[in-house]
Every structure is written in C-alpha cells, then in structure tokens.
Amino acid sequence: MFAAMIRALVLLLVIISVTSALVVRTKKITGLDDHTVGNVRARMLDFSKKSWELGCATQALLELENSDISVYGDNPFPPGRVLATNSPIVAISRHVLATRPPKMLPLMEDGATGDPASMGIAVLLTGRALNNRTYASAVADQLVFLLAHAPRSHSGAISHRVEEVQLWNDFIYMGPPFIAYMGAIERNYTLLLEAKRQIGLYRDVLRDPRSGLWRHIVLGRWQEPSLWGTGIGWTAAGAVRVLQTIVKSDFAHALHSHLWELYGWTSELLTATWKYQHRNGAFSNHPTRKANYTFHDSSFTALLASATYRFAVQSGNLTLIPRADRAFEYVQSQIKWDGTLQNVVNVTYWNQKGRYSPEGQAFVLLMHSARRDFVEWQNSGKPPLMMGI
Picture 1: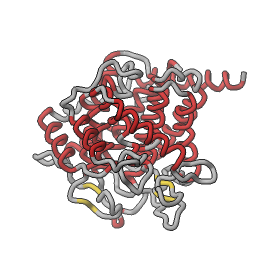
Picture 2: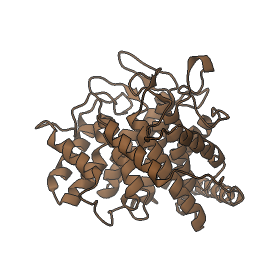
Picture 3: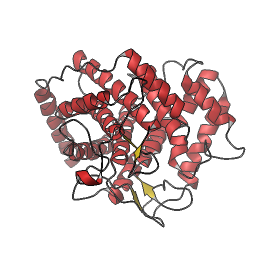
C-alpha cells in the first residue's frame, strides 16, 4: 500500500512537470551540420586508442548512426536489425578481438575492470552482424570477469581497478550500462538489478553531501577525491543509460521501485551540477573551484548536456533544457574547422588542459544525437518514458 502511494505521488509529480514543460519550448539553435559532425566523427576515430576511448566511441556511433538499435531506440531488445558489416563499430570490435590475449576474460588487457567492459555492447552487436558466436562468448567472459573476478568493496561495489579496491566515478559509464544491457538481452532480472545496485553503492561512497556532486576516486592506496567535471559527466550519462535500459527491458514494471530510486539519484546529480554553469554556457574542469584554479572544459560540458537531453525525454521535465542549449552553443563554438574540440581536459592528467580529447570528440556526438532525439520527441507529442512505469 505504502509503495503504491509513493509511486502514485511520484507519477503525479511527473505529470505536473510535463504539463508545465509544455510552455518551455527549446531555444532555436542551429545545431551541428553534417559536415561538422563528419569532421568530429573522423577526429574521434583518429584519436581513440585506449579501451574506454574505443568503448565511448562505439557508443557514440551507435547513438549517432544506429539509434534504432541503441537503448534509445523504440524497441531495442532484441535489436530489430544488425549492424552493417562496414560500420566502424564492427571494425573496432574486430580489432579488439584480434588483439585480445588468449585465455583472458576481459575484452582488452587493462588495469581497469570497467573500461574493457565499455566495449561489450559493440562486440555483442558485431557478433550478431557477422553471425559469429565467438564475439558473444568473449562478451560472456567479460561479464564473468566483472561480476565474479573483479575486486569488490565490503559493501559489494565492483572496483574500477584490477589490482585493488578503488572506486572511480568513471566506472558508472563503463560497467553498469554493460551489465544492464546484458540483463535486458538475456531477460535476466538479477543483472538489471545489479546494474542499478552498483550505482547506488558507488553513490553511497562518492557523493559529496555538501554539493551533491560525486567525488572522482576514493579508497585504495591513493585517492583523488576532487569534484572532477568529466567524472561527474560520466556518472550522469551512465545513470541515464542504465535507466533507459531497464525501462526498455521486460522487467520495467517488476523493477519500478528501483527505477524510481535511480531516477531520483539521476535528477539529484543533474540538478546539483547545473548550478555551476558559467554564463557563456561552459563548465569548469572542477566546477566548485575558483577561476584561478581551474579552466573551462568543453568535453565535460558536452557530456553533461547529452545526459540532460536524454533525461528530459525520460522525465518530461524541461527545466534544465535552456541550460543544456547554452552548453550546446558553447561546445559548438569550440569545434575547430577540422572537427577537433578545443579547450578540453587532458584525459589522464585531470588538472591540465589537453591538446585534444578522444572522449571529448565522442561527447560532442553524444550531445548532438541526444539533442536530435530530444527535439524529435518533443515534436512528437509522446509522453515521457517514465510515465508508463
């Protein structure tokens, strides 16, 4: 009875937000033209080499060029078609399996547990496209490694590092979306629940109660507990993907209370983070630091905007969309003629600027795709995704 009352109350709040959102029309912004998107895409493929970079690149390509079989498609489980065999997703996945050391469970040799898992969805879809079960077997090995071999904290949180228990907020984009996807594909309630549970276990440790933002790295022999922007973006975008995956699965109604809890965590983080946006639309690399101790970061700005557009379709609440549109315009202004995103953080030295960012290139495509799908949803008159749960 009590649970039903809570669900009814939350649903009422969603309906109210949708009704009020009808008067919040999105700003008329030009968006990225096909030429710019093509250049950004080309630089992403040029720059991406490491496990998480390739995982993020394939996810960006999936949402950009194969949105119908991504989790943001109407009926992604099972996918209604296969990837084209000439897709760069297939080429990347082929390379991953060709260079994978024998008798190794993870898809790629790496010091992180989560980063190789970010390639899992792409490899699985490639196996379907090539009608080759070797790919599905490799993905199953990756899942076994993540769930049964990776170190865990006392609470059960899967470590992001192989050599010791250490929690990175980056993991939320790498591990839980893969676990959830496997749960949806295999119709496995336990896997879907575990994906959501991992986000909660990480939140328990990483969330800063004062700001509502998530710390970067805790536990282990060394820590980096700053409120690093890109890590916060990874967290928000990963949570949105898990939410979308569970809603699209066969267990959405069975997991409705868990979905609403995850919804609350995601809304909490997005709302807390957007308070730190600058007037020009940008975010700082460390949002809470004074200007002398940080710099504007286009990559984080793009990733948070992408998560916000996705969450608006899920929630029906458009209150953050004007902020996301300002972020979009800022990011657009930072793209060079050849498609390289400027003013980005160094992907491995988090307090320094980088010349370019492989993941930042992918974030631009994620942002572009998310806004495209948001505008399409808004014009369609369809209800928000969570209203049916």
